[in-house]
Image 1: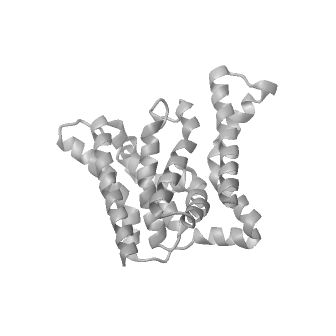
Image 2: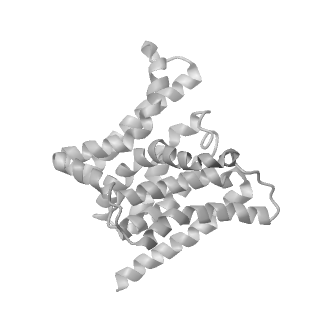
Image 3: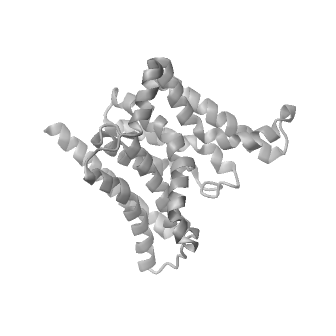
Length: 262
């Protein structure tokens, strides 16, 4: 429990400690002691909170070997091909499928900006992996928090807890106009999404023996799929995505229960 407390405390202190002052600066155009320009730059490092907290937590409780072991799990690439299939296809199928279904039902949905220069999609994928969330977050959420929760509870409860924490961590972004994916949208939508897809991550984590590499790519595919298939830009497509995700969650829960009965 101490590792969970340290990780979450450091994550929130780092991320919110950089994000919220910047939000205040955006609203007031000033901060005490002339710190506005500092947070205007420093807030860009806020997303690294889970990564920094994960490394510090590993160092405090396991020393240098613990940090090396955590980083090594980011290179755990050997696991069954079927899990690579899940990792690479589940989100494009669901998110693209919701968009396609909405079009079939009569919605006029223009292609997103990703298709203005499709030759740069591989670069976009790498950018998302390194700077768009996965690398900043997954060594924390799934590298530290998930295994510690699984030591104390079942995968269902662990997935729900991480999903709620993961979603709420993003709260300051909903007050930043430059964050168009979040700004002035309801926070409950993101929290529900992170809670549902957290089941996907937990299932793949368990199936790949705790591979953080798998978590990095799955997270990248989620963000990349929303970039390529802008389903959230259309109300019908966004609505259709919920039941599709719920079907996968139901199958995952069924699989866990089946495994417990064996």
